[in-house]
Length: 250
Image (cartoon, rainbow, N blue to C red):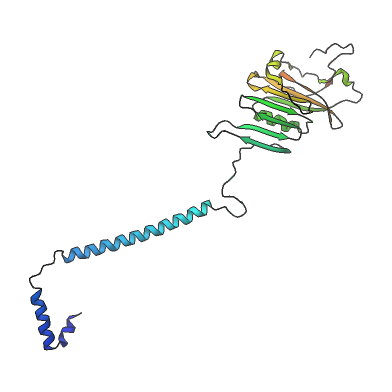
């Protein structure tokens, strides 16, 4: 109501307002006008802050949903851990570890071989027909085994009853008793040529688990397997036994 409204009041209205003025003349306001105004401003500011907080929380929830929701084409909201070793032509390859962050354990199944790393530090090797010698050598290296893997063809007319092996490269020799400490047979019911345990901690520096598989028309004939001091890089076939049955000096 403005002062202009009082200009048109009737005499009775003037008397009424005068009476009201006399009835409140002695009254006092416990809170000043300035305090009332300040309170209103604080209340208004608080309401705005609450509204802003609600808006921020809603935005955070939307952002979180965007992170958790799977992207198009992935089929899952979680990414796969790339722990598994990659092996060419592998049937299945896994790499597992303990929940407390322990070392990874290889468990690799390939068409021609399988490699399983055990908790006791040994490695179980099952060997069939080697179709990827470089792949097997890489897997053994990943398992911590220095290895040389070769595939050679049996020469025409070779008398396999006398055995076959690679002529050692210069400086390469059998590791002797070390081989018995490193390699051991593992009982198996499978019809396979080799099923062995490799104790990698027993391999001296500079020695290699060396295997050469001799094949004929894609079939495994025999596998020369042992520990050698020095790295064999070539393979010139020779007999294991001389014509008189005596072993060839290796």
